Length: 421
Image (cartoon, rainbow, N blue to C red):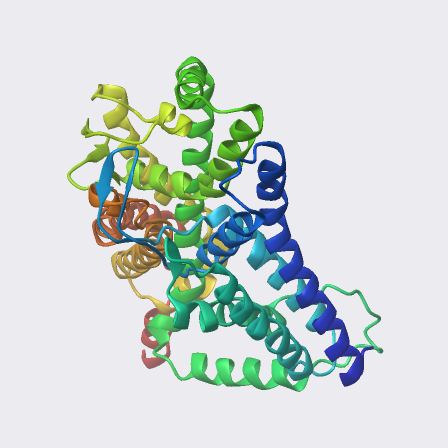
């Protein structure tokens, strides 16, 4: 069992390692590119600043690009706000892993303090390194937001996650912070209306299952489309006229954005679709695209309209129905509390739809943003439109499925009538 000093030092080392790993994963390939394909006009500081810019983007810090003219194309100052969620996932995984280790300690606050002590000054240092006339981060966000993101995940994981270290039950002393938070949340949950209490757990499970199904189907579909259109992808690579190492870097950049594309694919299956530039729309009802960057991953874009594409709308309906039926064992209390099948099905169906809509809105909001000047300031799915589509589709299918999983078996109303006769 760790004491407070050991907890502090362990968290200090783990946080420093997470910072070095995330920034180093960016700096290493850019340094190799600078070494192998260097020109007399560039020094190594360009690779360092670029790594710092991307690292800050991975924490949600916007990057401002100053007005300039490149290859004869003039553009005004704009901001890149897209979150490279592949990189973000690696950063958050490091924080999650540290949080699980802290969850096995008898005191959490030393670990929280150690993470803050390391990450805050490192964020300030990266902001200083990233600043240049051509591109610079929003400094106040770059100073505070990375620490908030990393330490926030560490805190939440240490409070709620299962401890990573397996210890004997008689040796494990749970941290007071975990006990206090759990007790307060339990009291808050018990004070809620009985309707919310009985539908919360099954709705959260089923609603999350709907979103997870959309993400899974989207990932599989993108993989298949890339496999079927690999010739188009290769032609796009050839059109970029990159060196071998440049191809590797472009591929890594696309992998960093792959979760963004998967989220966009999930929005496509809802019918809401997504945009690649202002005025464009890619949805099962049709595709309208203007000039877009020659990114090899765009070879997987569905083009045109077909009856098969329209059938994609069935995916969220099937997912909602199946997820609702699958959570029957978690709806025992719900079946007991409601007096009629209609009330139980409507309450559960609407609750699942709310959970799925909120989660999809958050997913599309996180993965959308600006990727370039002009019309490229709009990239990704519309959170409100996607949430509305998910709510309607899930409410219909989940309510139908709830007649199977939430039908009352012995409701309170029947017990009350028996007792009063």
